[in-house]
Image (cartoon, rainbow, N blue to C red; front, side, top):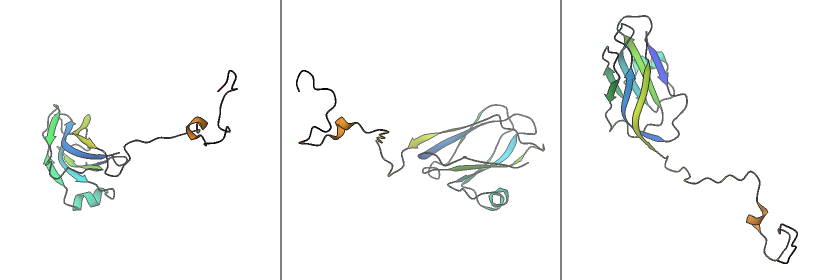
Length: 143
């Protein structure tokens, strides 16, 4: 049975993907063929079957964690990732017990580096010169 996994939303930054970690089992429900697509949010089962993937893998039938290295030149600017497990070793259900990613996260090009959010302005931060309007306190004991 085919399985199509997409990231629920785009990554918050840009990712240089190095490898994908997958753990399944040595049973016939282990995934066999993995097709990976990057930066596509328009895929469904028929489209993923027809398109040429960014990279394709034949997975081993093992219960060990497989560290599957990707071609780094193709996966240097990933903002969303779609994994299409096209088939398995014979069962009606494809079973995956662990899925992980190794890579480097980078901030998107024009994203701000520092963000300041003021829920309520502090009058002392916005003093108007020549007025005492923004003074706080009772002025007891002088200025």
